[in-house]
Length: 298
Figure 1 (cartoon, rainbow, N blue to C red):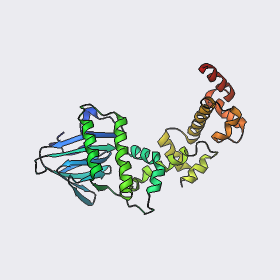
Figure 2: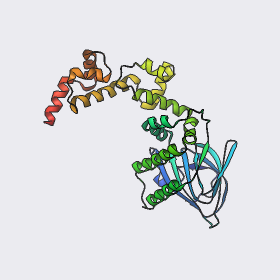
Figure 3: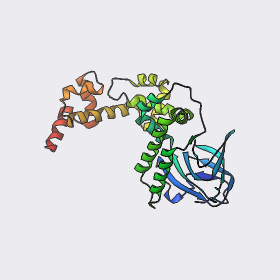
Figure 4: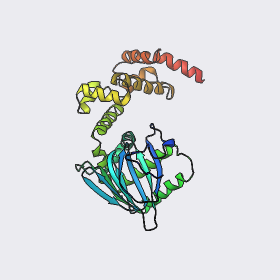
């Protein structure tokens, strides 16, 4: 893909627009150029990982400048930057570009929170618009594996894109955790969302109030509710109710737990309050729900 005669390049939209889907959290695209380019005006609408294969790339981002060659990979935060591409001695410039949303990064932090906590050094990490990693044997093989996938000649499924994204971040978390976690320090608003998700999803089955969740997130109640609604598109009360009842339903059916033994496992202090909440979601009592569904399965 070659960009020419464009004042501003919007990425990833302008890179193979026929395959661009806004709902995808991770996108992987090849990029080649037969000519040198100087100070392209680029707006990154997603965070980007540049897996440089041939050539040299210079990026001006804010008041900082960095140059990488094919011995390194480059992470760039979403935003505006100027990029200069210089061909290799072989006359080629090529790379693989991996774009990821803040949501994809938060999903990674949620999924591997325990591993991340174990790797943290306790240092205060500065925000970073870009970070670089020197290539080693693993990273070179990783890039080749991505290139082989792209050579299949068809759009990569989102599941594969996310898998390759997580593979790269997990490796860098093991080999250069402090550097990688600068990405986390760069996204203040996103990290507030992460703290909310971590607090609420870790307390679904506990008797914790919305006010207590706001306290755990170091937010006022109004701020917590506003950010929660932005993340989950519903109120905290409704979301917690539905999640608790989904857990209760699985206990009743999958484990065939007695209704009287379920309420305290999903954060209710009495069987009567649990039954009232269950009926609100499913329209029947826990006993009736269990009986109806187990009879159907039989």
